[in-house]
Length: 118
Image (cartoon, rainbow, N blue to C red; front, side):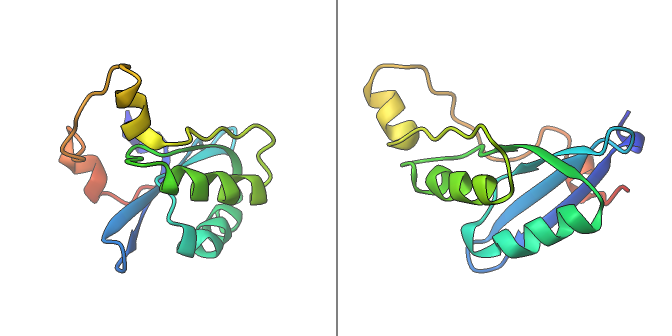
């Protein structure tokens, strides 16, 4: 199932976080997951190097809204016309009484996080 995707895992040592670029080799559509503001030039260069067309950005862990705000800037710079930001992040979401599901941040299948497929 995962043999036919473009997958890159990038690490930012300063924040100890991973960013993922996932693309479809047929349509060349891609998403970027968990962007790090200081690495947006690196991430955009990789998307272009792989010949991908960025379709969406996903932020899977936005605590107070700062990262999603940064991701919004990166994605708009990358040419995505429709970008949304949840001001206040998950803290505000929870304060409003909306459902929040806590996570360890680990992928259920560790194998995919270790692979570099192209």
